[in-house]
Amino acid sequence: MIKRVFILFIAFNLTGCAELQNVINELPQTTGISNEDMAAGLRQALDLGIDKQVTKLTQKDGFYKNELVKILLPEELQKVDDALHKVGLSSLADEGLKALNRAAEDAVKEATPIFVNAVKDITFNDAKNILLGEDNAATEYLTSKTQTQLYDKFKPVISNSFGKVGADQIWNNLITKYNNLPLTSNVNPDLTDYVTTEALKGVYTMIAVEEKEIRTKVSSRTTDLLKKVFALQD
Image (cartoon, rainbow, N blue to C red; front, top):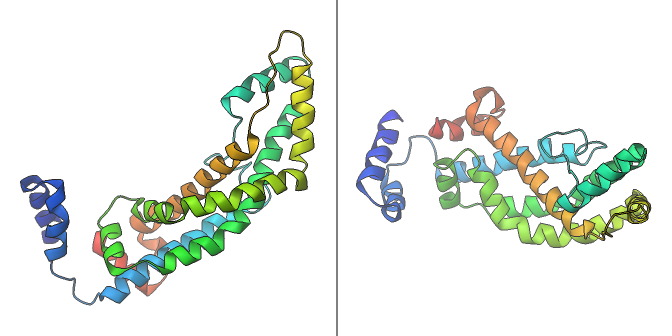
């Protein structure tokens, strides 16, 4: 494996980036790892990330109490938050922030089937490139395959979730109170788009957390297949 990494290093320095993929393609296959195993190992790693990390986001406080993905107020609403705290309405402002995160937690339940379908499509070439890539290469692959579809799926769910968790009433109340304060300019943000985008970022962030764990910690490779496949990039 050390020899293989050294060959890659020399190849990178002697060829342009466009040539590097050709060098990778010509490397000998590691003994005992079939093309099918390599692709299956990547699928298994992503399935594990989806099952272990994305599921956490669907729980109560899955976003709100996770500092990695907690949805904060958009810039234009920071002044709303600041103003309401100054006039003694901090609890209402805090409830508004919590409601945004609750909507995201509700929407993420829609993500799993889309991810599962994307993972099924991973090929040997995809797997090889991912294994030789950065610590988040698998997550980046999944992002490229699912982001547009997930946004389209999340947005109406977020909109419905606002009503389900009471976020629409809370924010109507918040913004009305803010707009009625003296010396303030009215705001009317598109919270659905904002929370949808932030929810997507949170989902991919948590998958990347699991991917890095599997890549860097042998103890996180909980199956024989994961151990065999990810040994290739050690």
